[in-house]
Length: 357
Image (cartoon, rainbow, N blue to C red; front, side, top):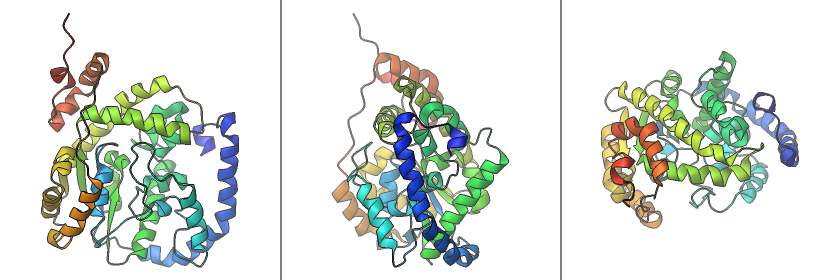
């Protein structure tokens, strides 16, 4: 990873040393688990195919994942699973690494203060990064060249055959382990980075279904700013320029969204379900009922009350619309204008006019 993405800054040497020591100490357990699951992983057929929740980061993917995870017919990775991709299977010593991992986690997510419940689902993109595969989280760990890392590890632009093979093998292996541990249950996965990888996912998992949740791009921009400014000081292994963050967000959002929308348009009916974030927050039960109906995901009534109970406890309405300065609003209208139109949201220049003298 370091040879591919560059050396860490001196302030991170101790952090890298701890990561290396942890990997060495856990290696025997990981090797034993690989032998234990080898045959089961080979036999996994992914039938029925996984359901992927996609959409740009900060668009409501976590909320939708948490709500749908109340359905016992689905299985998904938890935070302890994604941070231990090679050694998360139950065993007599599993509680040691599990408790160590959970003990170092904060009670809430740094970017939005959502509770980090150890039993709630997490995105397997974290597992891919831990396995050394191309991953969005490499942009956070190695932000010195954030945009080029995003292009290669998320968009696969210029990625060589070896990197793509590593991604395919790591993803299939990890999800096969998860499926083998949960026989008879369908994989329900949430991963914004997969928004750019739908053709590759379909090659691995023919017949997979995709639920796209989207949100007002202005709110996404505002929330992504907060995401990077909170996560980078915690996780970055390299120095970076905070002033470059806005430019990266402005570049990355339309790249990912245009690829996602183009890929979804090519899917057959029932394999791409589209949801607005404000629709989900306003009426979660009826929104989920529509998702189940359009995606043919089973009888919604059997899980309705569990989903409604979670929504009552965790949903507190929409956040106020973000206030954008005129320069930012103008840049969004210029750089993201076509995406606003494709998603059906008003351009920021039409709702935020310059102040009159």
